Length: 105
Image 1 (cartoon, rainbow, N blue to C red):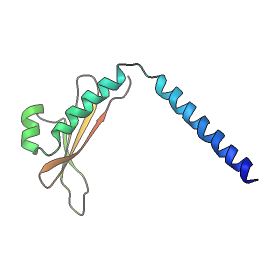
Image 2: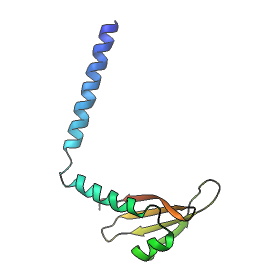
Image 3: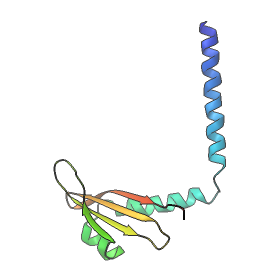
């Protein structure tokens, strides 16, 4: 019984590994460097003030707030020329979380 459970677990692990490797292989090669470039750029905005970000990116499409530890710090929303949306969340005067969404047309 223990041996059959062990073999089942090993087979399941191998199946998951094969499925994951197949899923990764379906993406085009240029996707990885593109994601790294966007991620690097977004991370460079962390820790910057709202004034610094607006000086670099211009006025946002929308200014809002979000709930964080009982307060409502600013949230800037931008739309990119390619149809993506960028959300920049602030806490204690600096950007703390950035979100980038590109939806297919």
